[in-house]
Image (cartoon, rainbow, N blue to C red; front, side, top):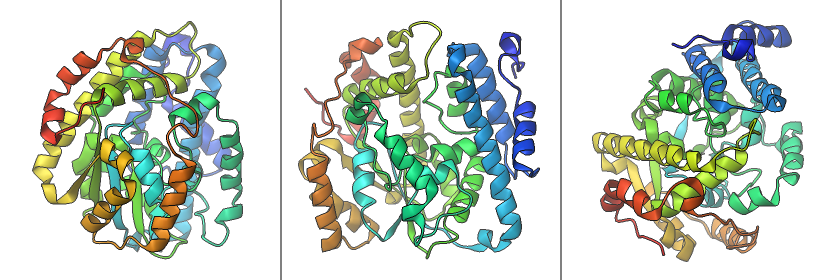
Length: 387
């Protein structure tokens, strides 16, 4: 492994960050798993790859420190409530696929159904104490997240749906294990390590966090939405034996540059203007490897766990698609949920939050090259090509 503390010690080491978290929290038990390896890989890649402007260093590093503090608080909670880890986890239902293929829209619509337990961004960012149904509407974490959403730029709002109480990517849960995808940072060396990393311990820890988050709730079926789970399907099945997957599909000549546009907008400030033509090939290769790994794992796991949803059909007939998904899950799609979905559709119709403009060429890509690279995927799932 590369030596930490490059760039003249510009960034702290893993042990330094852990010591700081212990000092702040007053706790010492970080819990199980191989999180230190992931944290070290991430710190090396930040030093070697990211080229951040020094003004953003503390914001980036503080997010790692916060995740370490969350680990400490989680273990302290479990020490006081050991029965938490004896509770079953119902489901989950996991929406996966290439990003920008309708995963968020599908997840946000299904999140309107009260029979699902959603994994919200605001509870992931600070999981202790676990939220309760009676108090979460006025939970300080939720209110802070609502205020933060008001400050989102029109550019981001045009790109992505931000529903406060919808299920969202488990970025913070996996972040606490320091095995998150981290495609909010240009840490390409870390991404390469992450794609082939062993996630067995990661998803065991993931389940640990989920059991804590559900501990103050009546039992419900969990609804996950994480396109990046496709890279490591078998470890998540090992942690959640009853999991079933809804896999979304779209022309990669649309989804790959769209994701390139999103992540390049989210990346923190660089010391000099970032070459967007470097971002596209990195993103495209990353997602292509993920799809190769997903298809191979799906073949081994068996088709009975998977249901496919195509973006064009979801846009054309969202209620019809939802009925098919619910049939696959052997769940009832109620009139109340249908009405809520129709209302959501009206509020989030195409262009309601602005227009997301992008092209493959901005990011060093072309539609023809992308489709050639993803031909195995297009052919396997009969993906419709878009004009």
